[in-house]
Amino acid sequence: MSTGTINVAVENIFPLIKKFLYSDHEIFLRELISNATDATLKLKHLTNIGEAKVEYGKPIIEVKIDKEKKQLHIIDQGIGMTKEEVEKYINEIAFSGAEEFIEKYKDKQGEEAGIIGHFGLGFYSAFMVANKVEIITKSYKDEPAAHWVCDGSPNYTLEEADKTERGTEIILHIADDETEFLEKGKITELLTKYNKFMPIPIKFGMKTETLPKPEDAKEDLPDGKAEDPAPTKEVDNIINNPNPAWTKQPTDLKEEDYKSFYRELYPMQFEEPLFNIHLNVDYPFNLTGILYFPKMTNDMNMQKDKIQLYQNQVFVTDNVEGIVPEFLTMLRGVIDSPDIPLNVSRSYLQADGAVKKIASYITRKVADKLKSLFNDNREDFEKKWDDIKIVIEYGMLTEDKFFEKAQQFMLFPTVDGSYFTFDELKDKVAAAQTDKDDKLVLLYASNKEEQHSYIETAKEKGYEVLLLDSPIISHLIQKLESEKENVTFARVDGDHIDNLIKKDEAAISKLSEEEQETLKTFLTETIPADKFTVQLEAMDSNANAFTITEPEFMRRMKEMQQTGGGGMFGMGGFPEMYNLIVNTNNELVGEILNTKTAKKKERLVTQALDLAKLSKGLLKGEEMTKFIKRSYDMIK
Ligand code: ADP
Ligand code: MG
Image (cartoon, rainbow, N blue to C red):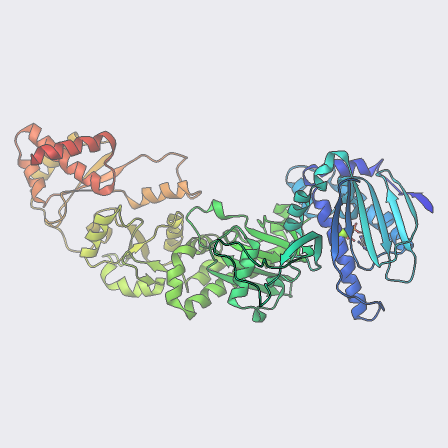
């Protein structure tokens, strides 16, 4: 037996190891299983190339809890280590690696501390949960097994052991304040979180498997009890799927395989994904993965943090911020890349060349997929539009490359359920909706119910009305207007329709200049000036007497401020202001003007104003109660 002292530069590394990764103790298991996996894959490689003349067989990794002895065992059948190798890899290399790591991160907090969890401390992370660690290992080479013991001080012992099967067993003597790691539930949770898709089968206990009933089994009794219960047997409880879908070739996978992998990833998710994108590159960086488009809701924050990041099938994190362009963090699925440097801060990550390439590759793949879906089956794409538009619109806003590509599949739905690309739309409405200044005006509504009367007015003119209802649409419209020449978007309730698309025809008012003056004065005095700006317009006599509009610019700025950025006013700097368009050619307006009794005149205005409010959805509370009462009185 030999004893020794690990060459420690820092006073004593073990208390440090235990202390500083306080919130991330659990990663020790991922580290040890990664080592066991590496050791097994190394053996596979050596047998493949004929270097190791042993039977590779069907190796597994086993995790065992011995509650009584307060031990956790991780056992593999990999290459193992000779005594000299333990000396070298554990006492020297791994240790100095751990030491360097601690040196670098011991004072770090906050964001940096989170990074540490991604960046393994390696073998020595065992000391985060154990006060004593043993290694019993037998190399594939014809040499005796070795037994290493270290109690958390820099002293260790290393002696020969009588283990005969190839591989390594790590025994953790779990510290008294870490006994949660002796709980079956806790270990199951960790294995499922970090090792669910690791390439070597991982066994954790046994489970009962139900076998198919034999041919001649008796039928179940009517009360549901089985006369001949199906036979069962005890089998290894393998917690992982060593060959997850993303490691396979797209050509080897069917639609159903992608769907079942989705269920594997998100067992609690009952909704099926809309479609998937298989990522697969090996130059200039290595990346595989499958992204899924789920059905999106309009609540954008709810859906983040669903993409899982792996490094060679080891789970790293589900926060892919900085790696995947932000608009794609709403998707689900898996990305696996050994080329993502996780030991750097998020801000550094975003500036990293390889990571930038990864992000733009993913963006391009998503755009290509959307384009091919659009080209291959437009009808189906239109059906999915509502569920995916938020991602596309968000992408168009934030990634210029994506904005360009999206021109080919971005859809503009109309209130009547037709879908146009921008170019199609332009062709369709150019003739009717170009105003006297040669600007193309694209009309839209954000809510079919609330803006019903405005939509109808526009349709009567033969105009096409789009239905654009995403929460970020004002931002996108703003961008489209600045990118496209001579195009403006106008919401149907932004102004009277004749003002939205101004044609040359000069409107003739039935009222004289003087009458208009009197009317305007009266109305401005009667109608609260802090809420409405009165505006007289000579319109078709059939058009409503009063119409409330909200100028496009103000409304858009307000919306943009609510959904972040873009506002040029301070927070809350938007007054509730509307325009009240008064149609001087409407009969009722003439009547208001000519009514002599002040009371009656006022009543007409109040009633007409309430009606206008009603159709804009602004009539509420006490005003509504009064309006209803007044209306009943009128028909009594
Ligand atoms: P890394 O895995 O990054 O090399 P670790 O600290 O996790 O660093 O492990 C240090 C070294 O110890 C490994 O490189 C390997 O040579 C050896 N080792 C650790 N665990 C095992 C194991 N289960 N089987 C064989 N060798 C192992
Ligand atoms: Mg390791």
